[in-house]
Image (cartoon, rainbow, N blue to C red; front, side, top):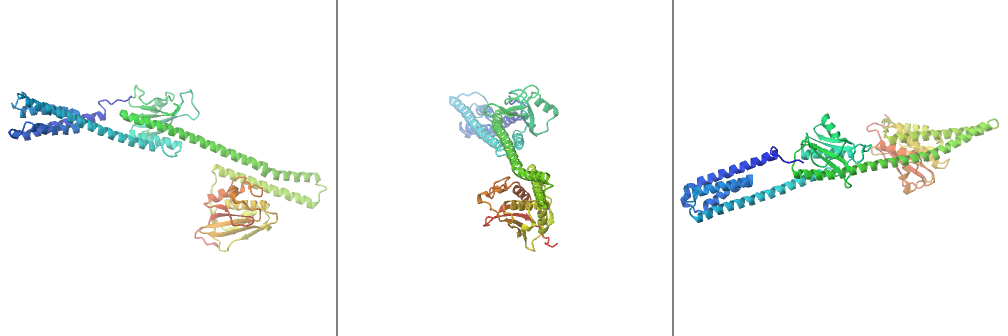
Length: 512
């Protein structure tokens, strides 16, 4: 354990206060004697005793009880020699004078002890207040929902600023577990202060990460303190090490209290990380199940249709009428286009889930955007079913036209799949501030009010019993990547009307 030695700065400060207090007491006694000595014949025997109390108390206030005791002895001598007859001698003939001297010494010592106790109580209160403040500062470092890496850095930097060692490091067990039970291998997780040398780092890890309780390892490193971060079940979650630090017992208690709180915070952060990984795995599972749903539903139907058509062509090719063959070839082409769209959507969703989506904006007109979308679904949505209505003064769009054309194509495909075969699908647009709102309206079964948010999730069910697939989920991600939004118009009485907003080109005329 760390003990304060005479060479510590705190000890030097205590010695300095004693010396100053003693000097003040002796100087004050000498000054008082010099002032009262010419007036000795006019003073009562008690007056010098009362006056000599003042410099002694001043010495006590500055240096504690030791200057008070020295001042009491010095005052006794001065009082006896210069103010108690016979003068110039330590001899006291009158018993009343003995009483005055004894009372003086007793009063001075009692007052000195009281002042010292008062100062000690004030210093203890100040120290406790300081400890409370420092513990509050340390505890503040653990409050908040910080990721584990930031929390570890915050712990070491806070300990470094409060206790000012040469460096502070935090060691945690390896992620792959312990090599030996109850003695986990530790690794450097965070540090603050000066950078560790290779020898220092090796000395920290040479003991295979064995945690220690608060104290000194001993030997050649008398100023290194290691404290284990232990949770409630007596299981250590790490170790905090301070190099070249010297503090009192109260500082050790403060560090121990903070270490306990840090252990709970680190364990909580680890549990949160585990919960996050669990949520991620659940999301991956959900996405995998959705993918399986796509394979079982959206892939199986067109593949079955293609296989049936190809089998019919092979089996009855010689006897089949030309119109029937053309119909089967058209079916194969249609279902192949549908498969290509599904594969494109799956690839797009993979980009979104992996965070690889990148927006490359350019200037494009609304008519050109609609043309790209119609071309993308030409095999699935006949152009004869589409009506396009947009104002002539509609501004140009500043978008990634590949992504937004994909959004519009997905909406058109979804509308065509869920609405009657020969119903109309309308594409419209209007300006709204610095955004352009694009709408796709169909004459299908519509979307229930309670499902208007869910339809933008993967493979959600609609009111007609169909599935929205990936198209709307991809559309939502692409639109939000442009800073826009997508929603269902609640005011439509029949069918469904889906709107999305994209930014328009500022200060560029529509016919530039």
